[in-house]
Image (cartoon, rainbow, N blue to C red; front, side, top):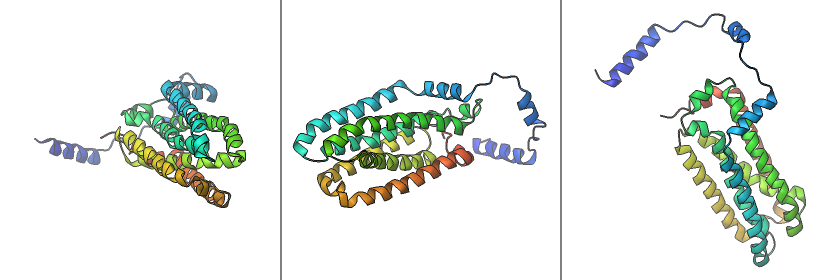
Length: 249
């Protein structure tokens, strides 16, 4: 008997003889004497699962961008440092998204679904932790950028946040529809593609970062923020749609 026929028979048997729904499930779970943890402990545990190499690589990328921008800015003129630091934003976003969905890439999503904390809670905690470090790096770089490029802190924050958010939005879509480790390679390719766009646009930095085009950056920021918020809401409330794409084939 072929494997395909066996699978078909098992599928039909499951349809004909469905498993009965568990009785008094909620009551049993409420009375189950398992060790309970508070929100702070839960966050600390999940942060502990994030690889130290992610933190280290993020800091090194930011430091290298500032150092190279300081050197490059002397020959590139205005916006040289801003252009260099903006170029690493897609890589920071790729690190954040791929680390968030690392369990799916390594075929461990089903195991985490069986854990005490639900999967969407785990994903959002990890995303929040890595993203928080990214924004700390942005805040740390802003005073140098503002002084070097003669721009306001708010304006510099917008210039750096837009490519980060754009990459996150697109990488989330990749993680939603691509299974297994292939999603990591697609996200890396996405990050390099957006970096290529940024490097090309850097030749016209005076136009791209000029005062007359800042409203375009604000509009882009609002659009990507809305899309990212929608994706986070889907993960939080519509995890079933994401779950079916978290299992490797």
